[in-house]
Length: 148
Image 1 (cartoon, rainbow, N blue to C red):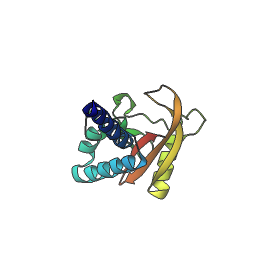
Image 2: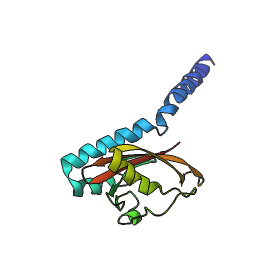
Image 3: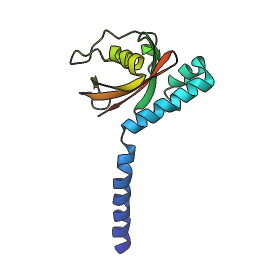
Image 4: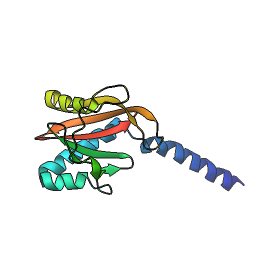
């Protein structure tokens, strides 16, 4: 009986310690963007966009993934191929915010930064607060978003 209780306690402690590590975080988004930027600089545009768009590739971690725009806001890479080639900068979020346009503005004026907006969470199907880290790398904008 003691072994069973000890095993349950160890399991609970492990679960408690590991769960926060599994949550999406701002640090994870920044790390993934920096990794993507290095890959782009090493491998070039074509290979980078192909890998960024690979839904089973190294730039997708659970629900967190890299996507990229050109400097006008046209989608260059995304795990959902239907979005590639589209410019949705004039499509607002649920509160009317032109967040994709802000991605471009932040990248062009600051080089990098965070943009907050409302977006449908694919897990909950609810409109939730999302924040995306954007970074201008040469002639593209590399992004990674997380739900808050």
